[in-house]
Length: 241
Length: 104
Image 1 (cartoon, rainbow over the protein chains, first blue to last red):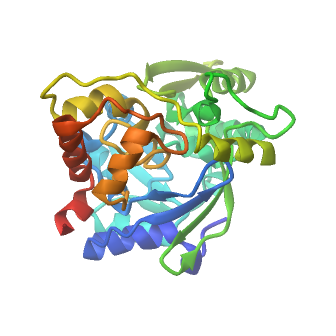
Image 2 (cartoon, one colour):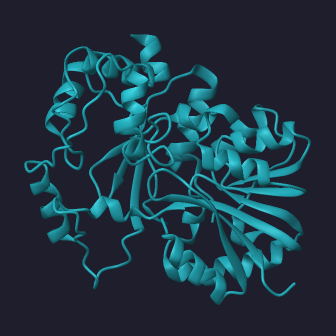
């Protein structure tokens, strides 16, 4: 499924910022926290402005790269400028337009799950791109698809974060309803100016749960680097090669 | 989830205090690195541009000052950041808002 052009708050905000430098924030409603904002300018960061985890991932990317959920294409642009063969993928029509305008050679408006079989050396899912699995159960479909897109010795590079700290109490304990969904399964509702998107779920996953899911689906999961606050960069490779 | 949200709301009035004390004459960047960066990210961009992002904040400086000293919904209070050090931190925080800062 693709995002409808008229219901594309992120893409519209990115296009607007690219064309006019209007940095009106995207309004973000979540079921686990108060309303938050997302600055369009954040998507237009150069290598030096990227968080350390992203910089490491960009250095590790090699060969033929698929940037999944590429947004404004900043990571893809960096890799393209480094001489890599990079394809930037997004389901947002306006984001794809921005990436084309920024000079990316290979941009695809398509859903990750609808891609035909291909052989990439690196699947890049930064800025918590793995959230596209939506729920922990979503890893089944993700890893099945990833197998059809990865070269035998290919790698998946992704960053994520355990959101457990959002539930921390005054005494340092955590208040979580264990009968409820996993605490990293977040329901989002985005809007930008008068444009409202379709509500969607996005997963933030703890290291150990990612490792369990990877192993269950025949992938090795190595934590490459930990960030300053519950965030990490992981590299996943196929076990049976 | 209702229980959780209720608890989070209650937390807004029961803020945790931090005993962090900046060195005298510390720069805003240094205080940010020591006291703020862990939760607010390398450049105040939170995590993935969300979750405690400061760069798209539209708070006035005086409002930010109150939150730093008294705490917020999930943020501990930093009562020991005050005076020149607090001013330095606030100036630094505003500088993290690239476009908004340019407009001011």
